[in-house]
Image (cartoon, rainbow, N blue to C red; front, side, top):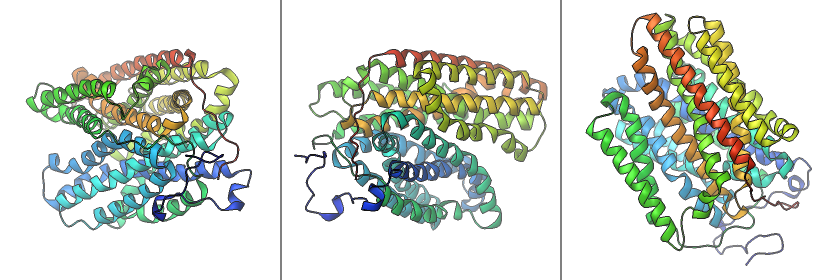
Length: 490
């Protein structure tokens, strides 16, 4: 049962009910954008945490006196947990309440951050990172859905642009802030810094985000489907993560791929047969959603492949230090942060299909500039900025196209699928990027050889960006359902 506004009756347990926004906020004309601000804080915090920790790996290795392989689990445990649980939390949110799960996500994330910052051993730190990641998944599974359902259709792409800009800013600020915290204070503040941010974001989310409407009917959660999806993600992403250190023919890597692929096939077979699927098969049969997710994975692949290969090019190809590498990379996420909010206006003027294709071609042209400047730092910086401009526009327009095809009752599942795609694209960018880079000479200590590998890999990334643009063109041209939005949200 729902009332005329699509709200369910209050639950008997008060902590399972979403708080209504204050009347003065709900009645303000700019109220929908306050919800976007609350989502932006979550996006900033999650991406800041993802990029801030990797800088401290050498410090953490010395502190805990463990191998480099062991210390990487501080990052892997977080990444694998987030991506493996995103769709599950999306499904729970579509039934229980998107705002409810989003708000509690901050609570879990802050508790996990506190435990990480006070961890006495590496084992406790990794376990705390898993808890932190569960909170991160609860936040990320709802971020896109809340933006989509808080804004009218004509403002939706712009809102997603601001959310993408917040993610990019978190990614850009992470290494800089991490260096300051580790250098002036302690590695523990890499995690404890999340608490003051969360104390701002938590009340903002409670006050600014509207209550959930038109939720999916409560049904038993598909635990088997959730487990198979988690095995699929962990197997494939784990294999990608270990491929560089162990080799692509390692039994562990091959076994990981085997488990991942088998679990993926079993997942889709199970989802077709179960009465209450985690992901409704009709969603992935929709060509707009299917091709849009494929395009998104290629866009994120390009972004993170550059985050992998640029430091090697700068340090080995150009003979500069890691600080210079960080500065040269900075224009990439900054350009995304600048252009992503403009994507809505761009798409409204030229159409989503054309906008996505042009954005992908712009990003691809940037890879050509990067390749041409393999021996010239200034040209590389210019090319990375162009890539960022294109990727920022492309990802925002493409994501809006995908979300426009998701029924209102499944927006959090759609949001989870997009964020899962981002995680898989990230892993592929880091792993497959090295697969292009190393055979061409990327692991060499001879500057000209590394520059050649950088040139070849940049052109390969450009080809994938063109493929992403063509996929998004196809997705934008398909028939799609439109999300209706009630004008009175509280």
